[in-house]
Length: 114
Length: 108
Image (cartoon, rainbow over all chains, first blue to last red; front, side):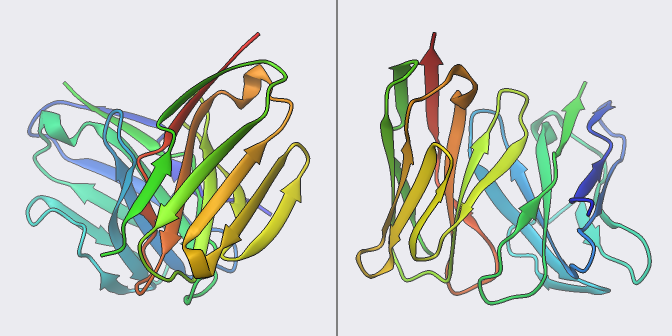
């Protein structure tokens, strides 16, 4: 039973480029969460999605960041016009349901901005 | 929003020693998870423990929800236990709120 799959594991972009991070949830999970970990810090919530719906985006920066979880395919976190401060590890998690269900995490994508 | 505090922030042990990590949270929760982030950055889920006590090998955890704290015990520590330990809780929303973590170094 495959876990949460994130790709790529490492992504290098130059300032001004776009970054696309992908996340496939565990089989049977329809709830996806994205978290960001800045260097030497804990993880911070960004966005919570269910299939085709954004449920909570209270942690998303107001500009340049967007997320989707289409009916078919993985969830995508998209960062436009990247800046140095976007360098971080981005983790995706999935859960079977709501109301306190455990969240299972992928190995993360490490984004480096040159 | 809910606040999560972990203590101690750093800990250095000799191999074989025992340790206790504490997580305090400011409100009632319906989910609490302990994670180990290894030196390669992977986040390993240790326990899902909104209440009660669980054990897994040399690790065990206890959450006293009414008093708003959780404890993670590591016995007979090994160098592979080194890394950062996070406590994360879920309160009134679906998002997990993480503590700042506790960096553990186990020396041979």
